[in-house]
Each structure stands twice: as C-alpha cells, then as structure tokens.
Amino acid sequence: MVILRHHPTRIQPAVESRTSQRGSAARIPARTTGETRTRKETFSDPWDSPTENQVANLTSAIWRELNAPGGGDHDAIFDRLFPTLIALDPAAAIRLIAAAPAGRTHEELMRQLARTWTTKDPAAALAWAEQLTNSTEQCRTLIEVTKQLAETDPATAMTAVESHHLGDYDQSVMEDLAMVWSRVDLPGAQAWAVRLPAGVQRDEIISRIAFMAARTAPEEAARWVVANIPAGSVQTEAAISVLHQWAQQDFAAAKAWAEQFPPGSIHERAQAELANMTDKGMIR
Image (tube, rainbow, N blue to C red; front, side):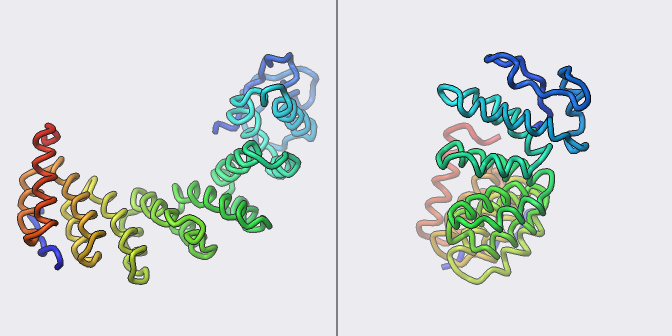
C-alpha cells in the first residue's frame, strides 16, 4: 500500500623546505642556485615550469622516506612530498608508483594521485585511470577519480561510473555519488535519478537523494519519496528518514504528514519515531 499523498503545508601542493629528521636530504633545491628556497619562493606556482632537478630531488626524497626504517615519515610523504610531486610532474608520480612494490603503500599512493590530480586536471586523471590494465586497480582508481570529480562536475563523474560499470565492483558507488550530486546540484541529481530503470537500485538512489533534499526542503522531499519510490521497505525507510529531518525543522508539519500514513507498520514506525525524538529532546 502506498503512503497517502501529502497535501503541502509547505592538498596544498606547495611544500615547505623541510629540515629533515634525517638531515637535509629532503630539501628541494632552488631552480637556478644551490640555495634552498622558502616554500613561497619555490612553490608559489607548482605548475610553473619545474626543472628536472626539482623533480629528481623530490622523487629521491620520497624514496628515502619510503625506504627508511619503519616506513619513514608518513606525513612527510603523503601530506607534503608526494602531493608536490603530483603538482610538479604527474608523469613522474606515475613512474614512482610503478616502481613501488605492491601493497598498502602502493595503494595509498594510487589513491592520492587519483584525488590530487583530479583536482588539477580531471580529464587527464580520468584518462590515466581508464588505461590502467589491472582491472581491480582500475576500478578502485576510477572510483577515487569520480568521487573527487563529483565535487565539481557530478554529471561527468556519474557518466564515468555508468560507462565503466563501477557499480558492479562496488554497489554503493552510485548511491554515494548521487548524494554528492544532490548536495552540489539537487535538481540535476533528481532529474538523472528518475530516468534510471525501475528496480531496487533506483529506489535506493532516490532514497539517498531524498535524504539530502530533506535537510533543506523536507516537504518537497516527502512528496518526492511518495511519487517516485513504490510501496515497500525502501519507501518506508526513506519516509522515516525524511520525517526525522522534517520534525527537527517543523515538528507540527511533520506530525501532520505522519498522520496521513496508512494504518499498519509504517504508521506505527512514524509515531514511534516522533515520540522517540520528543523523549530525547530533539525537537526545537
């Protein structure tokens, strides 16, 4: 039985020259002199014609940390050195990863390259991820790229997810990106979601988008759940999620909507949710 229709009431890439815990090995030499420059002087624009010397010295500094006892200074590698290498020369970062042995560090380097490169040049990062030959590594990397890309271009990110069938590798990836998309562009996310083929995945995605919509427009989210998710467990969970957020903003309106639910488990759950929120002092 369908819920009764609601009648509205209405990384920073710059790297500071480090005084290394192991000496001055990790210093990045200036382009034209032997003196070490400050962060502002050397890396004010990491994309500005880096010298081979800079890239080589930075790569060496990363290898020294990776090969140091205990794995070296993790923060130095992943917060400063490697992000700067990506900014200066992504190809050099790819070569470094290719030389790194398989394992946790290799995977972390891959994730960081995917995220950082996507922020600077999403088309190049996506093209790199698409040509990876290891299928598992390709899926993982494409997911990282699309997650980052979704922050600025969710439609393109979702197109990449669909074209590479990343949902087959990770069932949650489309739902997660739909939530990001709805935060960035709610109408765009809604328009995309309603065109999906009918099924559980479509219902779950619409439920996630409704959850995001309810944070600012709970009444609209309530109508959208009723109109686009068929009766069943997914609709019930989506309705309770919207009800919870609506009650925090306008308890009287949320309660009026819940009263329209058909008799049975959905009505009982809605009343229990409102009572629980009242008992816990969650109502303004």
